[in-house]
Image (tube, rainbow, N blue to C red; front, side):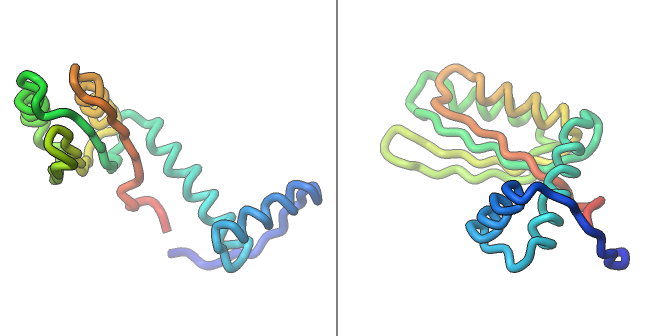
Amino acid sequence: MGRTIRFGVSLDSELLDKFDVLCDERCYQTRSEAIRDLIRNTLVQQEWEDTDREIAGTLTLVYDHHKSDLAQRLTEIQHDVHDIIITSLHVHLDHYNCLEVLVLKGPGQQVRNLAQRLISTKGVKHGKLSLTTTGQDLT
C-alpha cells in the first residue's frame, strides 16, 4: 500500500449535502472512506470492461429441476468450462425449485459468456451474475 496523500475537492453544496446523506445511510465514518470506495468501484468496473483481464464473481441460478433434462444440460455446460468454476453450491428451495451458486474466476469475456449460456438455458427461471475484482490491483 502506498503512502496516504490528502487532497481537496470542490463540490456544489447541494451535491455535497446529498453525498453526506449517502455516507450516513451507508454508515461511512468519514467522507474519505466513501470516496476511496467510489474510486475502487470505478477501478473494478474498468477491470470488467477488459475482456482478457481476470475477474471473479458469482452466478446465481434458480430453476425447476423437474424440467426435462435441465439439470443435466446445466451440468454439461459447466463441465465444458470447468477451469473457470472454482466451486458451486446447490440448494433445494422446495420440492421443485433449486438454487445454484457458482463461484467463477477467469478472463472477463469467458466468465460473461458462461453466465449468459447458463442464464439463457431453457428452464432457468432466474439468473444473476455479480462481478467483482480478484483484488490484485487494489490497495
